[in-house]
Image (cartoon, rainbow, N blue to C red; front, side, top):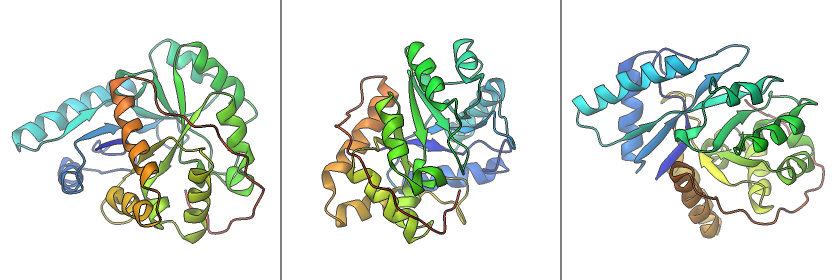
Length: 255
């Protein structure tokens, strides 16, 4: 299994602060059955901006330590890119990283709104021959209040990634409920842990998949895992026709 969204590089953002903590995360990932992880440190975020060069350096150090400890795990490069008006140019020049050297780009919206320039950014990314993946839309307040907003972004050519903890109920019942509604409406295409640490922001990769299986969404599990693999392989992901969702109110939203 492949995790397409994880904060595992040591000492760069709000993920693990030391190599020891990073290795503990990697060992836990192995136990969950994960074989590949795309390291997606925060980039161009108001709080953290982990540069391309820092990602390259830290991944090399992490790979060296993984090899030294004989841990079976592949680490791929990436970033979780907070969108801004310069996002397309940053991708065009290579200053911003795609996922695992593929055409897929993980973008992050602000937690409370969808900027007016979001659609032009999506269109600009597509014009580069790349595909924007919206990270954890279920935890964006504007989308949670009106899921049709995500429907419109998907119709403009983006795809979306759900967080394992959201599905498993880690962020509360409200976010779990909206997560399942987005999934059932074909508005979610990939699945990631968004892990930061083992205590407050753990993997829950298997827990989320198990919840989907128990709620009779076995086909969705297969599609998520297949699409995660296709991102690393840089091939076309599986996309079904999205359905429109009605407006609803949600509480206890966490980011």
